[in-house]
Amino acid sequence: MTILNILKYPNPELKQISTPVTDFDSQLDHFIQDLEQTRQHGPAAVGIAAPQVGCFQRIIIIDVSSRKNTHNHGHLILINPEITEWDGYVIGREGCLSVPDYTGNVIRAETIKLQALDPNGQTLEFTMQGFEARALQHELDHLDGLLFIDRLVSRRTDLFQRQPKKSKKSKTSK
Amino acid sequence: MATWYMLTVIGQDRIGIVAKITTTLYQQGCNLGEASMLRLGGNFTIMLMVKSEQSMSQIEQGLQTIINELELNLHLTQIDANLHQHHLPNIKITVSGEDHLGIVAQVTSLLADHQVNIVDLESDVAGTENSPIYIMRIDGIAKGDYAKLQQALNKLQSQGIIAKVQAIDTLIG
Image 1 (tube, helix red, strand yellow):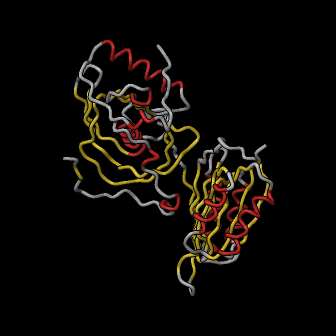
Image 2: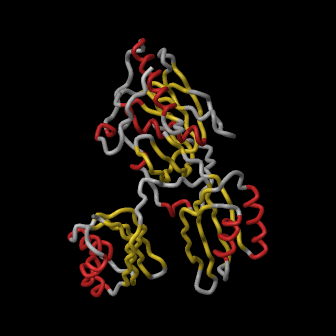
């Protein structure tokens, strides 16, 4: 396995939109192993996206299972992930392997429904909330050429953090 | 050799203070570092790291015309930059209550007693002139559990001060 080089802002390649994975082969498996090794090598990253290492395909890994009291689905390799529903919003602090020595506040959906494929091309569906949903949204942004610094909100915005909206009706992306 | 300075500018808030100060510094060949610029009451305040080959008095002279024109108060201090060493806060404390003497002192003294390092503090006097309220938000670095800090802060409720400690769960992705 190889530790891959992390692209750092302002590398313009981080703005590139990644393309869906079409070949579920041994090359994909090999890349995923290297991507995971790279995530673990970095400073406590709960997620990583393929474009962060210069591979512009829609592949992400997230794992928030090591955090206390955090709702999670364990270690997830997600290919061509797509959010199908989202609900509520929360402000939270984020940092990024591609933006060293900086953290800032970002608004994310509190709860999301997600469709993706696993490394064998099988369909996966999850409902994620809280920190795991935040991690997913952060990594999904990388696939669309966005960084958390594109979504920063004012430090003063979270004086009184609003509770997530408990609406019965979810917004959908379609 | 270039030296880092902390430039402090205070004046009655008006359009163009930042533009004129930073343009003048740019024209003097100064490189700007991290900054905090905000309106406090009716005043505009600037704390700005400035790197320059010039002496302190040369920078002051260069800014003098703007300072006079905009009726600003200027101060420069030589500093160590220590950039690229951001300390990551792990707790935030939101404080609110009817405005009265000693809120900041009491809250921050408790933080110091509990070994909390404040990395960011901002406060506002809100409400009305007749009934002002004080709102403060602090980001800090706590060692270990902050339950005892919350218990200590709860004692301030008898004085009408509500202080809530929350973890800052920073996501790195």
